[in-house]
Image (cartoon, rainbow, N blue to C red):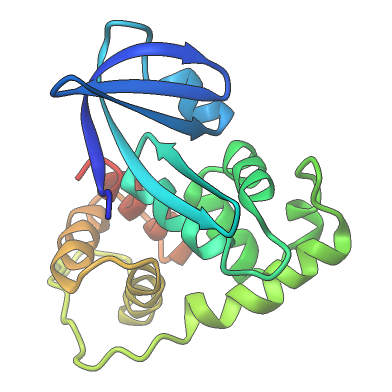
Length: 203
């Protein structure tokens, strides 16, 4: 199983990027945003990988961040959403905006993505909302916050649940939330989630 490859970009021809590591070239299929942001030929890069295995084909998909790969995995768990549609959604939305659109059941916003019609957008909301908001947290994580913080315990709990459903460990999301609380000036779960995801994207 591949996790990531760290090396030098030896070739870029959209939508493919080849990264050489220890004299082995890993050619990965990428979405437009990843392709544009990872750098140019001869630049050093870390590319997070996902192996797609179909009956008649195998391919590597490459992502700039582990966070994008997590969202890709979640999106492709929806029946009818393949690599092309998942890439289109990753190009259209930042992670926090897409998660918030699902939680808020804003299928009209999601349907603005090229190739995603209203019916498919509703299906994405229907299949993913429970997954993002109803994860069983076996042990409550008490996140420390200052007395002056405007963020409520309920908001912290909601954001914890979403981050856990995205595959982050309790250590990862606890640290991210604690650091984010001081940067959020209102009791808003979307703002706290966006700030936490920004921090997690660089871990």
